[in-house]
Length: 192
Ligand code: 5GP
Image (cartoon, rainbow, N blue to C red; front, side, top):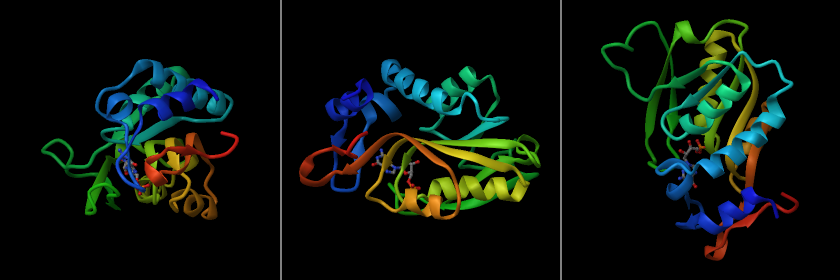
């Protein structure tokens, strides 16, 4: 078993059959040993691909996306979940159904930061039903930017997001794949 898998098995907390709590290392406290392992894996996957920019959704995607953008030496754009006095016009927007909060929210990106024909890597912390990723894909479509790949820190392969995105022709790369959270136990996908 690799270090990354061991980390998730040791520190992840099963909330129920659908949700894994990762507050101690991914999305509340950020553990740099974990993040560096994740980012090294992403870097190996993406270092030879033509990527102009990474986009991620605030908040939990920001830490891995920042470290990877630094390694790939490309800009990172943080897609916002709220408009403000500064970000209100000249935006692309899309609707996302939240997995954890069970409500629909709008996401925004300034049109100046997502350009036609740019090669975009979408990055997020979790892949469940794929709604956050599809919202980010929708922003890229509106801008006529190319989605090179969708990079995910933790994919729960028993939920439908991965297949949904692959059926639509998108490349999906997940650093960690979880096959089940049944019986209060994290089961990684065989061979991962
Ligand atoms: P999706 O849009 O693919 O249904 O869900 C992805 C989003 O929901 C992620 O950005 C993440 O914030 C949240 N999410 C989905 N599953 C989990 C989970 O098991 N644990 C945590 N902490 N967040 C999750």
